[in-house]
Image 1 (spheres, helix red, strand yellow):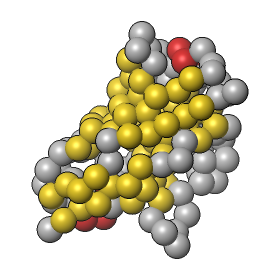
Image 2 (spheres, helix red, strand yellow):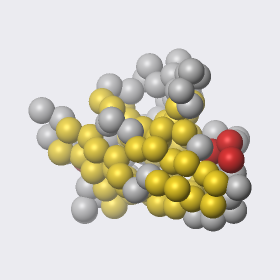
Image 3 (cartoon, one colour):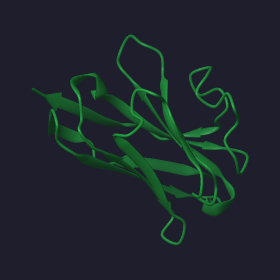
Length: 129
């Protein structure tokens, strides 16, 4: 059984930094592309980043490009999201998701994560001004 768990959320000041982590069990971590999504209550899920199984390639949504960095440590089986220069609009529940392929599709950010098969419960990020 696959288990996905996000951690690291909390309160961050606007302009500050925060790092989220995602641990996975029950599958061979380095064989799956993984992504971060986020959701504000009442809105749909928004794709944040998608990393290939090796971690060599990551794509980002325009809203976080040049501010967020996703990385993965395949030896420790952890996916990270390093959030820098955080803005108020980054406040959301952040989810880690797994795709049944080694790469991210060209439409990974569409369909509110329809491309992804396993999800965590999410971790809340709150931004103070």
